[in-house]
Every structure is written in structure tokens, then in C-alpha cells.
Length: 182
Image 1 (cartoon, helix red, strand yellow):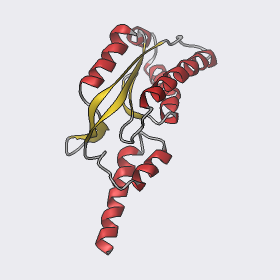
Image 2 (cartoon, rainbow, N blue to C red):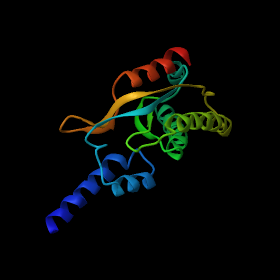
Image 3 (cartoon, one colour):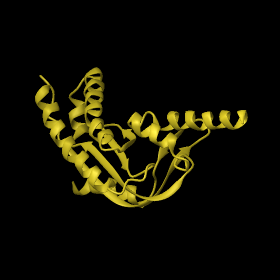
Image 4 (tube, rainbow, N blue to C red):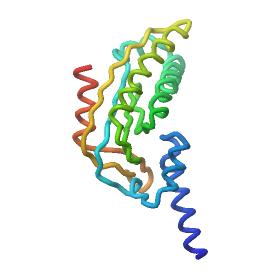
């Protein structure tokens, strides 16, 4: 019984470590309470993948000091991440000024597409507030690409660095929608 309890505590600690930096803490606790914890290992599911980045950011960044660039990116990413978490999405990764998020993994979420759209609409509102609340610097505009489909989600990487992520066609399409269509 003791060994079973130690193993269970290790699984719970791994889930907190894996998802704690990406997901609202309440959702992490919900994951811990689920008997099937396959999301860390890998699973195939229907999900919505979300990309967002700043339009023309390379040009904008050339006019900023390194400190100014880091400051505006950190403020922007902090502001834009809130709606994703509030609508139960997870931040898959930040890629420079871009955000990749997933709705519907690792938790089952029948309305994952609707949640991603609600997050996108809220992000547009928050961006207006972000731009009007700054005293100086460029006005930022964003592009968003959203795509739903089947994919694999799980913890992937090397033995030294792993992250919960989703590769595949659903991701590629969302990225192309954001970069080419939005």
C-alpha cells in the first residue's frame, strides 16, 4: 500500500510539473483527480489549435532597444495569455512574439472550438486596452489562426527537455491560417 501511495504521489507531482506552467491551476487539479492520466504519455483526440502573433513584429522590433523589446514582449504575452487560460486552453509554447495554444487536450472539452473563438475575441479586446494603456511605443496588431481536427497530444522531447505539445496537420493548418490568411 505504501509503494502504491508513493507511486501515486509521483504521478501527481509529474502532472503538476508538466501542466502547471501551461494551464489554470484548477484544471491541473482536475487532471490529477482523473483516473486515466494518459495525456502526459500521449493520446489521439480531436482538439483545436490556436496561433496568434503580432503583425510586422520584425520591423517593429528593429526600432526598439533590447530592453524595450523584451519588456513589450513580456507585457504582451502576459496580457494575451490570460484569455487562453480563462477559456481552458493551454499555452503550448511561445515562439518569439507568437503564441501557440491548444483547446481540448489534455482534458476532454466538447466545446473546444467555441472556447478558442471566445479567447480570440477577448484577446482582440485586451489588445485594444494594451495599446491604449501604454504611453509610448508602437501600436500592435495581431493575426489569429484557429483550426480543429484530430491529432496526437503528449509530452515529447529529449531526455533533457520535454514539453506537452501537439504536432501534425491540425497544427500546420492553424499556423498557415495565421501566417497566410489572417
